[in-house]
Length: 587
Image (cartoon, rainbow, N blue to C red; front, side, top):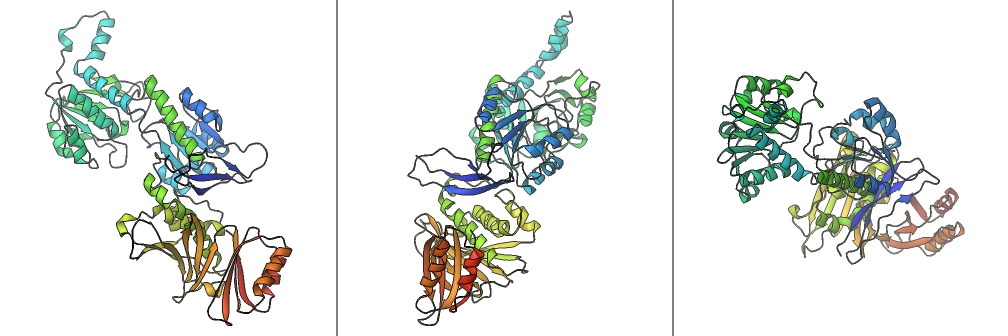
């Protein structure tokens, strides 16, 4: 059984959601994830708003975990009104999830699920800023979209739609609807992703010569199915048929415009089952009227549905379908299940494999780094609580000690957790893997990462981690190292995070519960006095260590406690004559 690591989702009494990491040991079987609920009473179950039609299998899966509100055809205003009551939103391509939606959610919306591949109707920047994960369903409708592309390709080549309309009108015009053969013709696939590659496979089976343009596609994957990757110019110049399969981005918007059509082979035929915006529709209409483009088969449009008077739709050499790429029974069920699983998983705190606005950390890296996730967050929390009031935290260094080379250690997740630990204790901001870098930049927090190269076996990912805060004063002077930085260091022991250094002093305390750091004169009885004060307050001590500079001089006592001591207990601790300074740090 493989190991599973997950984020635990916590709902606080004010319905704020927060995530924490829960590693599982490789030897343990997978256990059912649980939702940790701190809120009492009704309403703790998350609410999912389904804003567009979703297959029943997906709805039923959502209902096993959440309250499901199926409200279709919402206006932008209605969506903004509803969204503040929802933890997740599921849409298809017809609903625009704008910045206004995220702002109207007032921080409650944590997941947006796009039932399909394209995410151009979701404002990813706004989602990231608000810490909202965006997931899609990229695999379930791949075959359906590819099949529809081939259906349009063959129907266009043989005038199927026009001939059908003619026969139903009582005509018999065989000579008018003479088509063209596909065998030996060149098809240019524009965008060689999942759908594009499946279209290429099927076109090869029809005897077509297939080329593709995609600046990000690996050449070896194209060669494996007999496809040559070419430049945009070469694709335009040589293709008899062009099939669109690229996403709609600023770079691809109106990519096929007057200039592009001026460079195509005369009589080219166009298929678009991707996004309407990749074609300048007015330019295509002019190219059709001029005979530059012989025919077009379009499943998508810039505005959907298109206006009735749309000249492109009504053109005699255009086949138009109402965005049917994913519209098969099998694809609808598959997409519904895929997006429901992704949304439920995200609400449970799991890192979704289909997330589109969070760093994609490979599963094997997650498994290896999972013991260090809690360590980095807690080191961040400790370090920021050591900063004296009024000192602004702007410069943080995170050092990773490892025998591995720089390219063999992916630290993005650990950096995000340090950011979470640094920011959340001193603000109301929710930080997660999605928005950590944005929040840090927004607050002027510069986090630099360093590697401490160690000799030894590279089997262990990390020996220890240091977090250092520069240009600040400390409320616990012993936390300052020789370089003048607040420094805390920790490592993982027996699968649990431990604090191993504060400033220049070595300590050894398990990072569970909270911590009291106490610098005192090294003399007998101090441990007993502090222990008695805590015992009188029913504060359980779970760990204690003492580090001293030299016998009879100074020592630093590190005490792990399960409960937060009262103000009176802390005051009594500070009044012990041998205690020079102390600080309580809440984890």
